[in-house]
Amino acid sequence: MTAPSSQPDEAQRLLEFFNNSTTGCFVEVGAGNPAQGSITVPLEAAGWAGVIVEPRPDVAAFLVTARSASIVAAACVAPDVVGQPMPLRGANPLSSIDVGRRSTPPPSNYVIMVPTRTLDDVLREAEASEPLDLLTLDAGGVELDALLGLDFARWQPRLIVIADPVVDWQRHQFLKESGYRLIRRAAGCGWYVPAGSAAKSEHWTIVREYYLLLPFRMTWHALRRLNARIMATAD
Image (tube, rainbow, N blue to C red):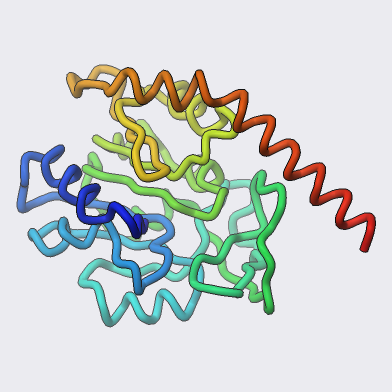
């Protein structure tokens, strides 16, 4: 998961959340642009073990040489579609998979088919620690598809950092129903911890981003979709 403008700050916040621990296990779904770095790099450098799931083959090949974490070249999907190859737009390293609820796919110059797996299957094969310390997801709009393939009761992540444009409550509601609560919103991501965790919440930011601004984002998102349909009809 990349955060170009605030990556050092976010990485430091992660280290602080885990009390600067030199041991732990992270799972990163969608490493993104390898040139931008990742918020999990400092954890890896501190001594953490990790599993990175990246669907784009060229990015995965780069990560094999650049990271010490285990690299899995696949797309994480829901159990009902696992095993079916999925199309992936490959216009740039920030690709997106054509599954889930994405509305207006970005432009692309070629499409490749990538293998699919559930997150559970990836974690079992990697012999990941139970419970997980950190799960980060930045999967081009299909983060929920990856979460549908996760057994929360088994893996019990201590912290989930999920990319969320907050144009609806789908991710938020799903994680809430899975026993998690939101404690922080930063760099386009929500931070979630188990509901019983003592971690403090940044209440004002959450109220602003998930309640006060949500109607405006929903309207803007709807207008974008309408414009896309109009443009498609015109073509």
